Image (cartoon, rainbow, N blue to C red):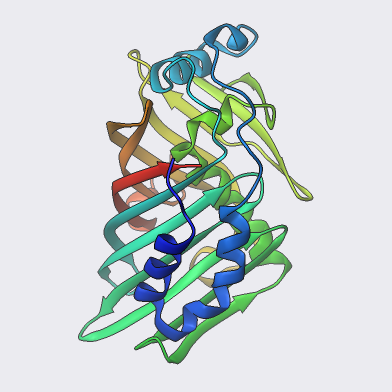
Length: 267
């Protein structure tokens, strides 16, 4: 466990500049949430679908606290009129929400800002040079869309999937399972696919969205994960490729995000 207060806040401001100051209150509220809901006991998973048991027993060491949050550092590429490199920090604490704060280069111009979801409200705020606004979005549709992202990115906190906030059912294939999350007024059902050794292969959800500016509606969203590393008794994937229309022939054109996790600290 890490003290996610001072260090993480400094990282947020370093990446986002002046625009990130608005996110500091939400950042602190996510960092100081509830305590772990006990410790991990593999015997508690007996009623879960077999792929869910296979995944959770593979990635969580018995006796590990059932952390509900994680602070991640990462780098990667994001697709916005071409692929752009970024580095980012992410605070993720379900069922409350997340903040993803990043800096990318748009040609020679630094673009920075954050996406956040907290207690049913969402906001996107990005600017050039940390000062000149280029995108500010909020509202009910964005909040519903951000809830979908929240449960996709929750794969980086597998202990939360073994706790009381999730109920499980069989998936669409013998190697998949569906988890049901209740977050604010949303009911979200991501589906995970698990390899024979228990590692996670992919995650997908019907996410409320409007890809390429179309009307709001449910759209397949998700991607592949891999390259596990152990952080304090919890294995998480350290590579991720996601986008809209995952699982369809359109996905290669709509893949929008590639990330590599470099550190993970649970709380």
